[in-house]
Image (cartoon, helix red, strand yellow):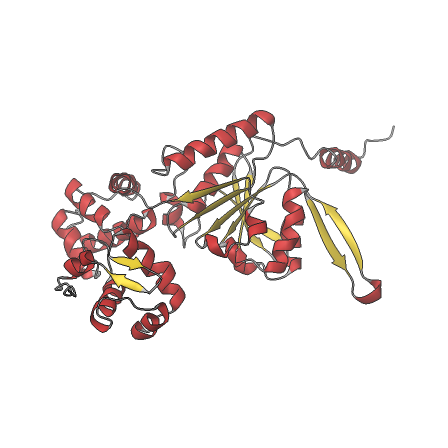
Length: 374
């Protein structure tokens, strides 16, 4: 009697699954894959695991919608999109998140993946340098996977064109060979979801931007939301902190959860070394002063930027190139790091003539406002 060939059964099962790509396995446990675009391989770890270098950040990252504080409008829209896709047993539409760094774009991508029960594969725009890189990434996707690309605005324009048919019709068009012997091949891709994150929405090309099914902007957080973030993080880190200290820390957190968590860890260090471990209001203020951070969250570089506008250019208007040369700073750093938060505080105005320091900036720095010409 002939024994059944297990290898044949396995190959038949794999073939059946491959021929039915629309049936998604909703309910799989979320895993995180860091992709090597050159080899197309991924290093898989479960969401509960974290490496030694970023273990604390993994602990602080929200894992449920209830843990994710703020961005209520975005969360409501995402819940509707996810629930509708789960009822139809389909992948959700491609999503694009944009906003300043540290507002929770990556966390939202992980939450979406967890709700769909999918595997998330993570890469970034700068690492995808050649068409072969994106081909390796896309060809390793399985049905229902989520591909998360951080800093997607830094994608090569040639790679963007490869993405267009992949996002629309799940086709990957490649050229094999060179010269007269070159030929075009088309690979079928399984149903997948692309989630892009960017801090520079304006640098994203129109054709790529239009292929996302939903686009969400993440705004700065309110004072109350940052307070909730700090309370949750202090419990996870086992930090004893009083309510007044939380308020001081929240005001200095630049309305950004990532900054709030970073300051909490630094204040915790200061309290353990210089105090008795308890983070009181006095200890918190001393720690922030030690770090060169004032009550509004401005650091030395921010104050130096404002002082240059006021003292060297009489409060403005001043052009961005002249200002960059005056403070010996890169133009992109000024536009991406300094200006957004200063403008949200009302300390800086960006006009067609240049940058202008407002009266609030003079008051915050303790400088006398310039006179008004009559």
